[in-house]
Amino acid sequence: MTFADLGLSPDLLKAVDEAGYTEPTDIQREAIPPVLMMKDIIGIAQTGTGKTASFVLPMIDIMASGRRRALMPRSLILAPTRELAAQVAENFEKYGKNHDLKLALLIGGVQMGDQVKALNEGVDVLIATPGRLMDLFERGKILLNGCKLLVIDEADRMLDMGFIPDIEFICDKLPEQRQTMLFSATMPPPIEKLAKKFLDNPKRIEVSRAATTNKDITAFKVPVTSRQKPETLRWLLNNDLVETAIIFANRKTTVRELNKSLQRHGFASSEIHGDMDQSSRLRELDRFKKGDVNILVASDVAARGLDIKGVSHVFNFDTPWHPDDYVHRIGRTGRAGAKGRAFTFVAPEDAEAIDNVEKLTGSKIDVFGKKDVRVGLKDPSANSGADADDGNDDGAAPEKRKDRKQAPPKAKPEKEKRDAKPKRDRQPKGQGKASADSMPTDAGEWNGPVPGFLDVSAT
View 1 (tube, rainbow, N blue to C red):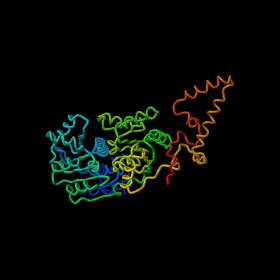
View 2: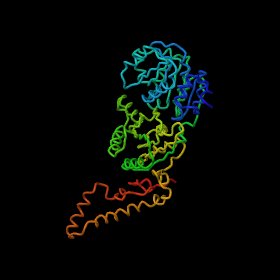
View 3: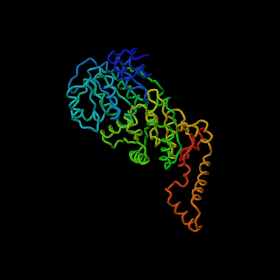
View 4: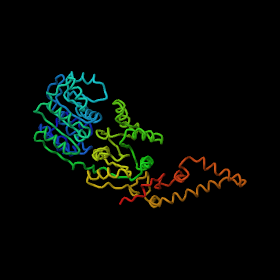
């Protein structure tokens, strides 16, 4: 099936083709025809399945006819975060370039002046976060009684962020005769209740079981102590063929500290978290998209809504507190049919959190072991060296150190003894034991330091 089979207009098909898409995804194939028929929709789909285009594309054709009026948007899309709202707007701009549609983006963190000006001129599509929309509504800057189409995106995230009362208030201000679409990766009971209250005989589309993880993502859990996390992360970044990566942490302070640590160790990294203003967050996202940096350290403010092609890895530096966040975090990789890898660091205190994740997804996460390591330019014939006991490296180190001490020409015994100790004292901290790791190694051998988690069997 192609996009042409879904009933989209020629102008829209041309924009889709120019964007490089030829075949619709499962959610697009199931959702677009009933949306064009003006039916209410409940869409349950994982992140990265093309969910956004499944409502953006038919909305462009639906909104193609009609007249704009000041302060009265013709359609409304509610998104939980600024980043997700901005990306929905990008989709409209990309696919709607052959249509005369005007859109406005209402998000916090930016001044209201331009937003109010856009509303005064009239908009076809209003994309908003609930907080900013409520603010402008209470100021009398927007009227919702002309809105004939409503999309609630990432409804489960709305629930997590406490927006459900705001959504109920907004829905009560909309016309009763309207088309409503609700999209969510999971369907907890409060979202089911919301759907029953505000949707009229909706068509339910479920392209995968709620809270399952993407089949294109290979996921691992990595047992570590909290102190081992930074070193283990650096080892994986250097040895798992990482092209681009997003690293999630539970706390904003951890995001800042980890980014500084990675930069000190020579990694091209950046950060994004809730304490940054909108312009700074967009700037750092743009740097990551352009490839100026290939590692983005983020708090959960960025866990949903980031649609960035080619993210090869996701690292959960902290096991997420809410199991739903696990699904959305690792969904930043393995998008649009690409393969991805996801690592979750599990400290002893995270035992309950990782159990909750596995209960939600309905499957055990494999423990990362030696057989799962991918070393760049690895020679398969060297596997025996790579799989050798870690003690071999440690055993070689004292021997090499001994050779270095014997290398200088012989001098008086007393002087040798005096010189030996200062040399050891001057060694940088932590290098004495790992000096063998700093020596050149053959292809396929460990390039140290070797984290302790590699001793853990994957079975």
